Length: 235
Image (cartoon, rainbow, N blue to C red):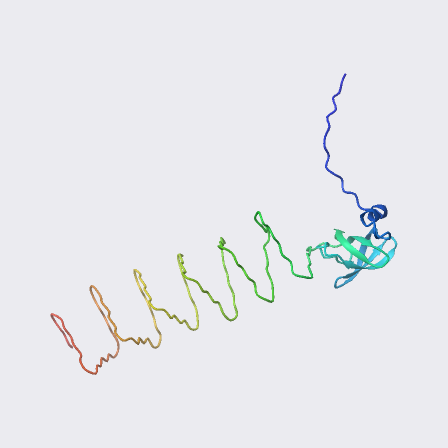
């Protein structure tokens, strides 16, 4: 019986660097070693780590983007004069994972798209300004809520809104425009106190009926008051 063996290419196996491999990576630093450690305490970018050779003060390397916390298992590389935490291997406590950068950070995707997926939501928080500079913005949501404490400033060439219902509640509402055109099947307006219109000329036209009613009515003119109709009834 002949069994044919088939050659299978296996993926490379990454082995944790030892002291010998660390010296191979850093030939100019003969005292460089790597070790596993547990974070004891943290102050800023400095971390106190317990390793196999004892406790040691280390600095968080820029490559360690997951923020170490007390209880985390970390990879430490160091020499006689300096030591760094390269990566967090295992979290010591359940909770959120923080990616911390102490300087400006840029995410660049020259030939593709950047997607952020989250099942329970995405939060953006900053005490300073948030800038968005894109060719187009598309928002598809069941609800959109915007809260601002002082000013909402919209500047653009044109605004088009298509919706079933619009409700605006405000203490004051000011509109300044060169021309305002409104068209509706029914136009209803209620003013509890004063309704005043100041214009150079007022022209109101109705196809069927114009009805003005009040407890008192006063019409004054400096020169002429004219009523022109087939019939005029007074009283």
